[in-house]
Image (cartoon, rainbow, N blue to C red; front, side, top):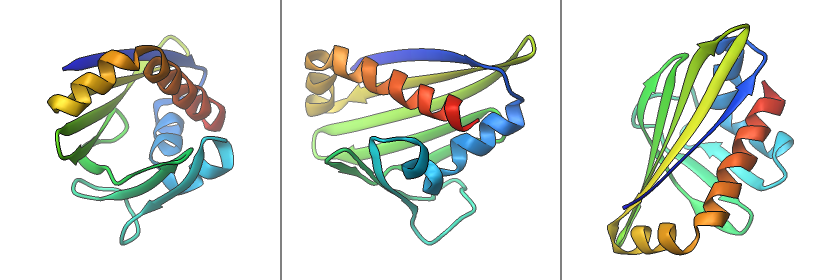
Length: 136
C-alpha cells in the first residue's frame, strides 16, 4: 500500500471550506484539470453517493464512504487490483483552517501505481488542494 498526505492552510471558515470541498459540480470551473464532475442521481452529497469524474484524460467514479460536515469526507475508487481512498480533513487553525488530503493506494495495481508515481501523485494532491483553496 502506498500512502500520501498533503495539507494547505486557508484563511476561511470550516463551513466555507466545506462548501467548496463538496461542490463537485463546480470543480470544472475552478480547476483546469477537472473536465467533468457530476453527482450521479443529483445531490446533496451523502454516504453512498457516486461521483462521475474526469480529471485530465482519466475517468473515475468514486463512492462517498464517509461524510461528516464540516470536517471529513472520504471517497473510494475500486477496480480490478486497485483500491484508492482519498480522505479530506478540515481542522480549525488560528483564524482559518487546515485542509489535509490523504490518499491511500492498495491492491496490486494501486500499490504499484503509488510506488512508481510518487512525484506525480504528490503534485496532483497539491494541485487539488490549491484549487479548493482558491474556491474557498
